[in-house]
Image 1: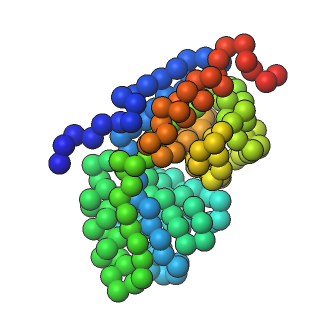
Image 2: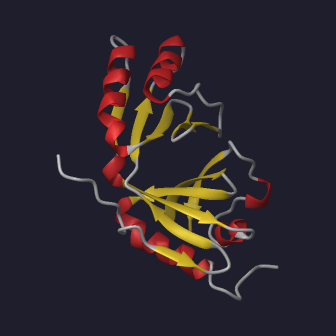
Length: 182
């Protein structure tokens, strides 16, 4: 396996908020109806509990986010995806499920600073000022699908890798000095 490469080689921008691409980052899309087997599988793969609706559970550098009633996004270090996939397969043996490594299909950004919520508020119909740590939203960043959550004094944004340049451009434009909302 070749060395992982981030979508934008760690691109960053400093405006009234800082924007940076995070990567490469491991991600697994997991579909399962729920129950004890799912609880065991997520714990084995990333060490968290199953998140409630519109929530994300974080344990150090690993996380599990609720994406839909039967879909979860597992986030972990890139190099640990194989072991996590094995743990999921073992924990869900005999259970109807789908686990897919989507690490190379996603791009991840961090938006940080006192006015980071304003950068995202310009792009998405979400009240980021009231988005509490542990809340996850699936929405749009302008015209593309994205998942977003508050964490460590900023926001994490996940989108498809194919639109990473577009999303970085949106975030950079929204963070331009002098364009603050208030």
